[in-house]
Length: 112
Image (cartoon, rainbow, N blue to C red):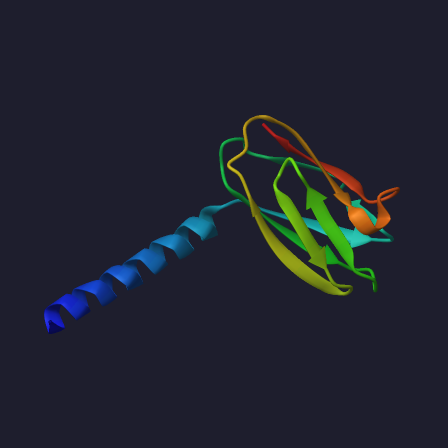
């Protein structure tokens, strides 16, 4: 029983380490929300790979990063940040909006 427990613990630690290394190898894109706009409004990512997007909300008010195409809907409180993982994406354009300020907060992820 003790050997089984030790083997299971080792497998869990190994799997966690592999997961951390895989996440560390993902490209990381940073988008800033400033004056109710995304900067940059257009980001390019490698197609067919998982990508991490860090969204920094520099505004004092919350904003929502939303994209039905990316299957993302995340509220980011003012003066805070969020981490969003997307993909792998087929080559193409994937628009996103800030639902609280749709007139100005627009952007697109381009997978190529």
